[in-house]
Image 1 (tube, rainbow, N blue to C red):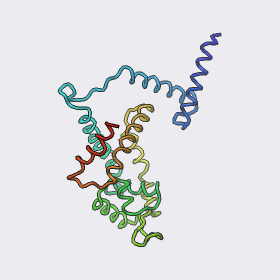
Image 2: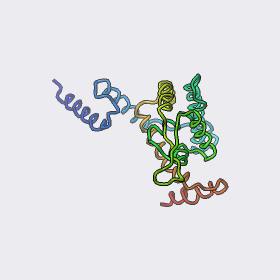
Image 3: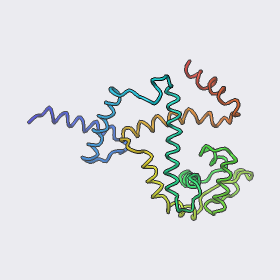
Length: 226
């Protein structure tokens, strides 16, 4: 019997157990096989693959490619969201996104709801008014500040959302496309890093005419020097 092979196999099982603390992979033979496959792809990606993008040979920057790809992916996602709510009571994807936000995070002020969805106030108010008219959300005075209205999802809103959640979940799965598990985790990590960079800028409510100059001076250049 090849005891060295058995020892290596057990070591690999231990590594799988240690790295799978959040149970992203099933604790089964199939889950173990999926993890090994993704690990090998990850190693290959790190050592063999160099990123390519349209226009690179003509001097197009990586930043330009990233910006274009993010915009295009957002448009693809909107197409799938539009399909997910076809023949439903929802007018736009923002309708169900606002409801999902309220169901996940609980009651909040109008402005907190709008900011959490990265909308400008006029756009957010239109969405909220539409949801109020449908009876999918309700508003009450805050017990801490009577000037503030707290928004929460209603039972009718929950039922309407649940009736469409199967297609909404299918749409989100399609957006992730053919990424492997490891690629999904890497993408989440990278997107979270970008979110943590941009959100503090967004919360400062910088005037549009000053935004780019302010970000370059206070957020980009300072970080590069540090």
